Length: 154
Image (cartoon, rainbow, N blue to C red; front, side, top):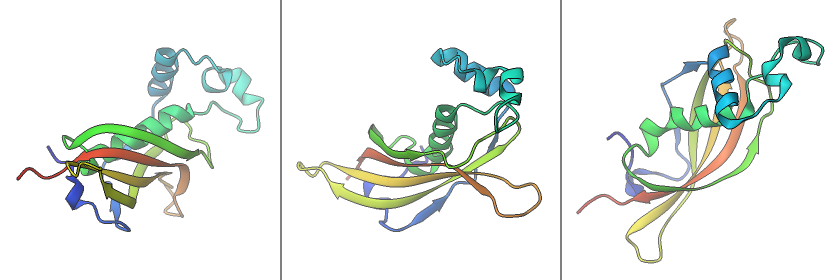
């Protein structure tokens, strides 16, 4: 278990997650198949070639799910009771096959539950694509994630 207990989160801290993942065509295809999302912008190269993007886009829900997954080891692995909500989701820029994604989480709020036995933690998660030319990386997804967290055992 590598996650944090409620007491270990500090409002205002930003957690830089080291894990990264390069998105493959198979990742996108599998996610679309599993979720029955047959949007041609994700799956049809000829269709996508005629759009403003010129190629297929990675499914935005996959991008968000990947961002959550990249944050788990440093935040809630083994210390979560439940995910309570995902709010204010934005996809300011597209993700393409071959892009490498990384994430960071900023703790924006925390409070104990009314019984004092657990805690609610809210984090702003931001996912970026790595710019291979060492220019500024690109924000591709951001959202608030609220979790019900275990408190440290006595």
